[in-house]
Length: 288
Image (tube, rainbow, N blue to C red; front, side):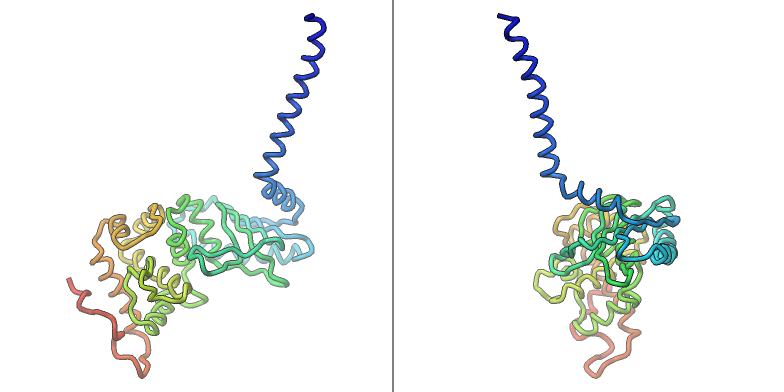
């Protein structure tokens, strides 16, 4: 009897192993098929490297000389970002992949669209026909990921990356934010953080004011205060939570924000509808 069963058992065991391996491959393809396909596609891309960058693109999109020039032009940006972070990323290399298959993604505010994504120190971006373009905020996000780890809140991380990049569409952040305040009137920190009353209708205005607020935090509290905000796990940040993270009070947070933005407003040219301060800026709260 045992002699008759041994061949069957010997046949079944390899079959079971084969079936398990096949199932494992199918599951891996189901869950990771997109990533594997992306990995294979990127392995065939042309690439150039510099001290802190690796740039990839399909050969038909850009020449190797164009990629080399782009990497060289990016190095001064990296140096400026690294210096602002206290030289925390000297050994970091940022990988930028220009991919024609990249699809635009929703911004952290859930409304705006952006044409790049950042995962760790890898940036994937839409391929612009004939031009190699990428906002400095993308590099800033990648450097923050490497130097400070995973952020606690995506929206605040975006504001911090914008602060680190240092400008808003070519304009100093404080002056750009002052223009928004001049147009909308002063927005308290509660509105900047969560806008419960819908006072800031355009998400770009809110993102700019958020980046300006981070600039104020950096000026008054230093880089360490910004890092605390970056790391704080706040799914829906509000003034009380932020005050707790920074070891201050909601009143003091609003007071400093108001004084900081008013200093910029005071230096702006007046319009016929303006007085020396916005009509709805409650200056009484700016005193201790």
